Amino acid sequence: MASGIDSFVDAVRNVFANSEDARAQARGIAGELKVLLARPDLMQEIAAKADGRTGRIDLHIDDEFGHPGPGFCLMTSISRPAGRTGGARAHDHGASYVVYGVHKGAIEQTKYTWAYEGDLTAPVLKPGDCFVQNAGEVAFFLPGEIHRTTALGEDAPVVLRLEGQLLDRVSRHTYDLENNDEARLYG
Image (cartoon, rainbow, N blue to C red):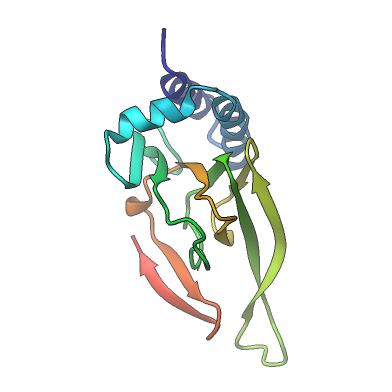
């Protein structure tokens, strides 16, 4: 019998094989991720794949399927410090999209948009939608969307992330919100 992660990967490959549209793919993958998150044995599978390692754990890397080109990744992070404050910098995923699913705990997602304030030559990043993702909930960010993820609570959340494209193959940005500036270009 296939593991939950293996079954999920097969379903994701099917989504990629049947649609080239990023939004349709992200929606399809989000539905499949909800199924995976509900599996009672998911933490045991993750622990087995982690093999004692901490930090970023790539649960599956696929070089055949993806968007906008071949190569997608299912990953998680292990052993983030409890009570961590702050969170990731505001960032985008370039021409790719990312689907986030929370297995345990909660995260806050804040979206940002560009807006003009007086000086029409220099837009600024403004916070937009902000929502909490609890265990079992899934959200996705389409190509070019800017967002920030923050862990909530004292216990480290367990979040699975499906990168529609291996992000080391895509130009993407982080943003310095204090100075309203692009902080770094990756990819």
